[in-house]
Length: 182
Image 1 (cartoon, rainbow, N blue to C red):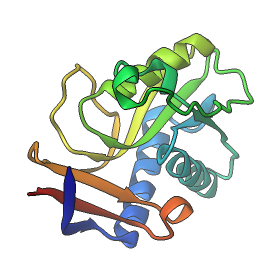
Image 2 (spheres, one colour):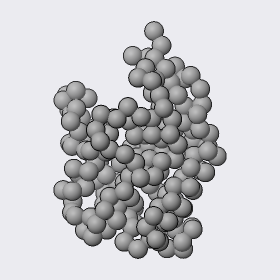
Image 3 (cartoon, rainbow, N blue to C red):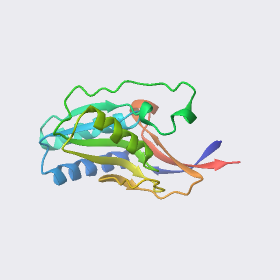
Image 4 (cartoon, rainbow, N blue to C red):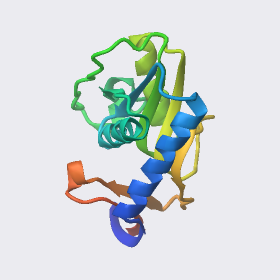
């Protein structure tokens, strides 16, 4: 399947503004940062989680612990993605018990990635709560999962995909809409 870029949806400034707003919403909903930890779903959720944690610290003057969650072995499509999928390391160097976990990812689509992340987190402990922060919600849910904090709602059709580029991984920030090309 080949996809071509249809249009740019969010530029670097738009991503920065969305993450700033999401950070303020996290602080407001939780009445501060007590017991807050931020965990990014590998791959693009990780730099987004770090950016949100940095913004939270900038706003509140309090450092927030961050972690990296690998969900490869929790996926329900594991046998269809590769014969031998590459498993990365989960890096959560703190206890999540009784914490308010802010789980971060780039795009919310069917909800299956988030379901896998919830399973992985519950194997690590029993947080007080898990709140979901997403840069882009594109719709098309297959599971009853919704984000608590959304940078941007961008409805799509099934023949389109949302591609998030981040400086830390791709060398530039931006969100583009791609469409299947025949």
